[in-house]
Image 1 (spheres, rainbow, N blue to C red):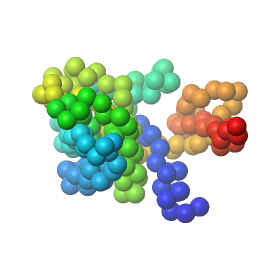
Image 2 (tube, rainbow, N blue to C red):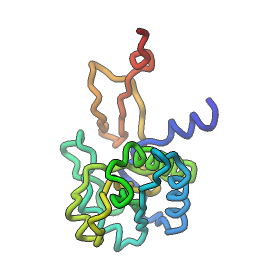
Image 3 (spheres, one colour):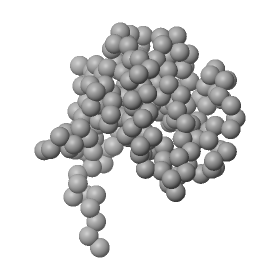
Length: 191
């Protein structure tokens, strides 16, 4: 396996972090810089980024995020295991009203960059957008597309083959996080 393959394999959705490992604005700027260099539909480059790393700002953002929908008995990371940085991806509606897949490409570039730096994160689309807009004073011209929660991961994520068609991720009693994936042969069609 080459180093890029390993990087992709290690870039998982992490939901528990060492909150004492604080990120800083320089790291977040570097990660946003990777998104800036990524592909953009028609090269419009409509994405904008909000960077937050202070403990106070992270505490303001956390209540507007929802975590791990398949884990019904888990309300998200507890204090001490919460993200120590956020990048909020916005779409500038003065440029376009259709952001295509730009934010997905940008988010994956950021996550790959985070992993390469020994960090991890989770792309969150389940956002209380009105609450977040009000809390951070985000102008109406910007559509809130994704919240990237970032930090130093403290959980073990294990990829396994899907069993009995069940795609739901789950945790064992030791806190290991299992992510079922479809087999490659099941994804490649022969028409």
